[in-house]
Image 1 (cartoon, rainbow, N blue to C red):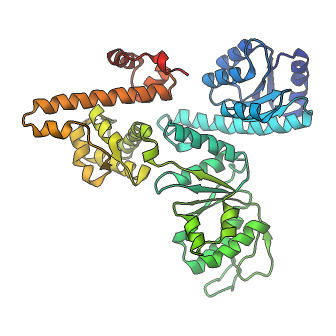
Image 2 (cartoon, rainbow, N blue to C red):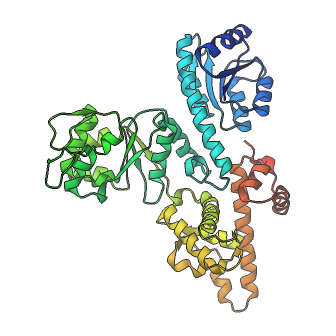
Image 3 (cartoon, rainbow, N blue to C red):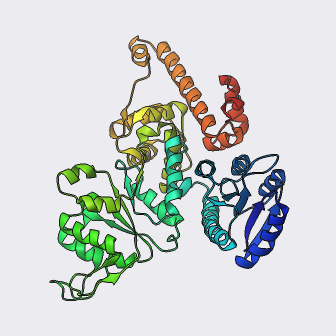
Length: 472
């Protein structure tokens, strides 16, 4: 199926020229041209557009405003901005609002074609990804991640930016924060994504075998080498190699790894010849590499080779507003794993999960939800059932004010009043965060929370909240 490019510019001569030239330069391309912002929005609202080539300076609505409006209609569209008023500030602002790339007028057609080729390839990958999620509607969000908090949005933006480069990336973060998932997302969205990413768990391979696993060996190179072995670098040629827990690579192997990165070539053990390879390196660690450099257990020059760009995955403590989304996602996944009918958390149960500390991060939360689902007999999981599994899960980050005192007063009435206050407070906080994330869009907020639009509107009326107060 032909890719669809929408070109928006108030210069009609330019539109006519690009409408003639681009289909000849780019195969299987349908070019649509519009000279007004309203017409462009109508096209995006009515049909799928793979790439939008958009001028910044236009009457009625400038290109940056149109970019934001288009992203509201279709967040998946890939946008390239063009302007005669080039400058870093304009480029940065365009990228902040979701533009993929930027080209300055006057441009040469070959330069524009190169930019559009990359944009169309990205658009194709994103559409394939979106189609897959539509077939599997209960999958996670962006690249397998769940969460819409500012730190997670920043992570998504960084992943997409890094996918457009071939830089070495060092992914840092606590255990269980999705470092390998981030690496896979960078690879899958990159130009190398058509080939499988190769992963090596560095501490899992004994020191005397790691060199052979990475660089390969020739038959007879050592005892037990009864045949040639190509190694992981050769396997990842043209693709990406993930060095998981790179801090645990022995110093004896670090030197040879540094040479491979510097020269882009490897020498298998027992061979007298080096072999050229084209490998992108992504590495990950939850350790303090700077401390290991001071202790001379990690080479400083290798550190700088690996750490061209740093990507940090946030802990659950930094994205507390995403805890309800994550817990609900893991709940649905656990029900599928156990072949059980769908379950849900009560508001009080979700409040308990959201207040807890999760030092093991996503992995700990997922295992906790699995245990809860396994032992919860009813469709709705109660606060009592969460607390019953509590000893094996996270630790409370803080007790609700007045709860201990109320329980200690004797009698059930004070406890029930405190419970009702706690549920109401959690509901108010959750709905406010939900509307903030969804920018006041009630329909999207209801879908995110798993509610009907009418049910959410009823809650808003009860809490005396106005959706318009959360719009940007």
